[in-house]
Length: 160
Image (cartoon, rainbow, N blue to C red):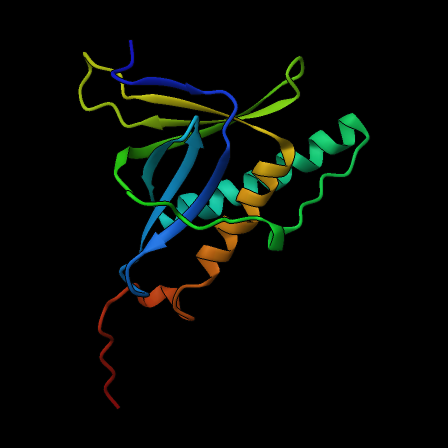
């Protein structure tokens, strides 16, 4: 059994944000549920992969449901809320869809620390519009970094 198992059904909001200066930013995924905050630490590449996966997922879902998911980002507050106290560092994300509830489920899984103990699992039940906004926000946060991320904070030396 997981050390932490939480169902946030439905989330009031879900977002990705960063703390810290470029080159040393820490990425967080955060969801609000019944006035409570649940935050996770994620990697920059996880934010990128989550954004791309959500885009593909919503595109497939829209085709299947014969709808068009749209969102007005300017109308949403996608900032992280205080206090930011990560529950755990996410090892893996999964996406699902509950056809009865018409909700997208974003599942965050913690890395298991030992063979005897499973990592935590948090399921966040979101509307299609909420996850689409999450996708846009996550990619905006990824692209807001340094123009040449391959440097990754290292000092480069050149000899001529």
